[in-house]
Image 1: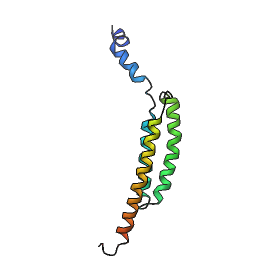
Image 2 (image 1 turned 60 degrees about the vertical axis):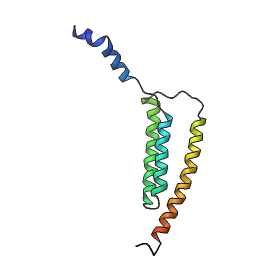
Image 3 (image 1 turned 180 degrees about the vertical axis):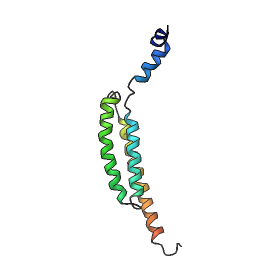
Image 4 (image 1 turned 90 degrees about the vertical axis):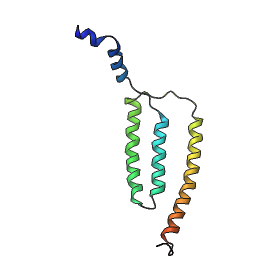
Length: 116
């Protein structure tokens, strides 16, 4: 009767799929890292103490993500990651250029006596 309805068929399959571990995606973790670096780069001149707070959060997050990768989600299958390296290099160059422009603009606007 009722037990058989829940232990066979599409409902059981749906429940098993919900319980299956999802794959750990390094690209998602890299996006988190990139956003953190961008935040620190652009906000450090405005609030330097935020750099230390972000560093502490990233250290704790590193330990939590390691346990997440090992115990909660399926570890990724090793493959060629040349695309990740290429995009990380492009990100680093663009971030440096943006940071130079941002810091220069902040300095010129802040210390310019003609701007009221």
